[in-house]
Amino acid sequence: MGAKSVLVGIASVLLLGLGAGSAEAAAKAAPSCSRACLEDIAGKYFAAVVAHDARQLPLAKGAVYVENNIKLKMNDGLWATAESIDPYKVWVTDEKSHQVLVFTGVKEQNVMAFLAVRLKTQGRQVTEVETSVVRKYAGAQGNYDVANLGTPAPVWAASMPAEKKSSRAVMTKVANLYFDGIEQSNGTIVPFINGECLRFENHVQTAGRRPANPAPGTGGEVAPNRPYETCAAQFSSGRFHYITEVTDRRCDINDETRGIAICIVHFQHPGTVHFWTDKATGQQNPIGGNFAKYPNTTYIWEAFKVENGKYNDILAYVNVVPYRMTSPFKR
Picture (cartoon, rainbow, N blue to C red):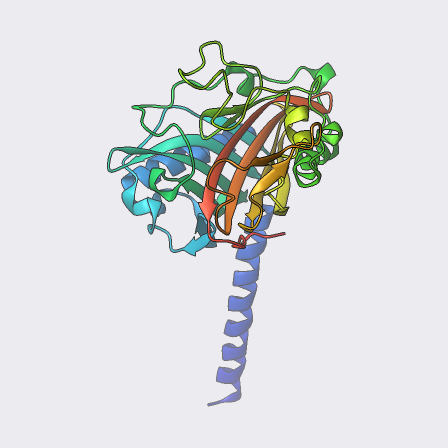
C-alpha cells in the first residue's frame, strides 16, 4: 500500500469518528421536548404498544425497556400482549427532567391490568421506557374486574395556582417524608394537610375519609383491615411495622404545572413481622393481608398532589416482585 493510500485510509477513519461524534453531539444538542412534545410521545407509546411495534416510537440508539424491574428487549413482555389502553389517564409531565409518566390501564386477554409508564427523552428521542404492569394474578389487591377504570379525580389534571406552587426541591423533600413516616411509624413528620389524606392504591381507597357508601359487612372500614382514621394516625399507629424499609427511592419527577410529585420505591417485607403494637393502647394486633406472611417486595409508583409543601391527594400503583429485587434504574 502506497503512502497516499495510507493517508486516505487514516483520513477516512478520522472522518467516520468525527461523523459518529457529530451525530451524538447533534442528538444532545437537539431541542428538548416541551410538555406537549412529551405527552405526544406518550401517546405514540400507547399506539405502539397496542400495535406490538416499538418501531413506531422515536427510539434513541441503545434505548432501554424495563418491565416490572426486568430489562427486556423491545417488543417483548407487554409489547406482545397489550390489547387496548384504558381511557383513564393521570399525566405527570416534567420537561425539566425530560420525562413523562402516565397512570392508566391496559387489557391483556380482556383482563384489566394497571399500567404506569415512564418515558425519558433526549433530543426528542426516547432513551428509557419503564413500565409497572400490575396484573390481577400477581397478588396485589385492586379493582381489576371492571370494563374500564372510569375518570380520574379532577384534582389530578388541574393546574396548581401560582400562589400554592412548591419548588422542585420542596416537592421532592415532602414526597420523601411520606416514606420516612412509614419506616418510622410516625405520621407527625409527614406533611399531610391537617393530618389527613385521601389515598387510592390500585384504584381502591386505602386511607382517608370514610366512604359515603361503605361496602356491606366492612363496618365502615376504608379497606379490609384498615379502619377509618386520619392518615397521620394511620402512620403513627404502628400498623405498617411489617414494612421494614423503603428502598431504591427515586423521587426525581416533578410536574410543577400540575403540582404532582412522583416517587418510585420498593417496600421491603421480610415476612418475619406478624403483629403490630398499637402505640396508643399497647395492644398487639395481627397484621392483615398477605404481604406480612412471606418475604416479598412491593414495587410502588406513588403520586402526591403538592400544595404549599403539603398534600392530601395520593395515588399509587402497587406491584408485587421478588424479595429484595432492585431496579435497573436504581439511583
